[in-house]
Each structure stands twice: as C-alpha cells, then as structure tokens.
Length: 88
Image (cartoon, rainbow, N blue to C red; front, top):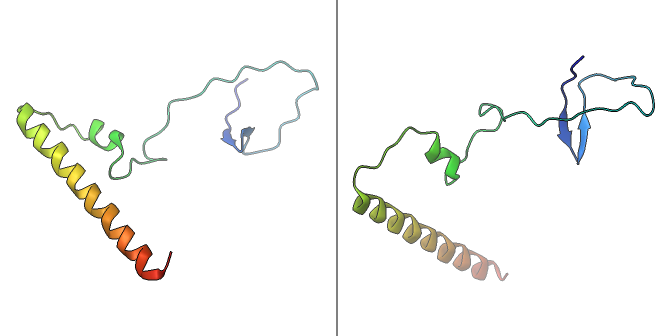
C-alpha cells in the first residue's frame, strides 16, 4: 500500500492519521515537485528553464546577463538608500 505525505519541519506529514505498527519498516521516495504547487518566482533559474526560451545569439545572452546584473545593483543601491533614510 502507498501513502502520500508532505515534508514539513523535517517530518513526513500525512493528510490523515496512519496507524502503523511500531517498528514497521517503510521506504520514502521523494516525488518530483509539481510546478503548479511551487511555481518559479522571477529570478529563479527554473523560470527560465521552464519558459521554453532558446538563445540563438550568445552576444544577446551576454547582454541580457549584463542588464540583469545592472538591475540587481540598482536594486541593492536603492535598498541601501532606503535603509539609511530610515536610520538602519
């Protein structure tokens, strides 16, 4: 018989109470995650990997990566100004 559960706090939690005899040996096999249950957020490499985008021009990809880095640096600087304005 197969039971399905979810890991929470390092323990497997089942949707209903199981009554297994003490000492019962079990096998736990992680299942592949369902993307709809844990969608990739912007900036997550999974978002790009699952988008179906293909790169034809390596220079275009380099330009995109440089632009992403520039945007990240701007965000970091903006956060720093916000924190200093609040006195943090």
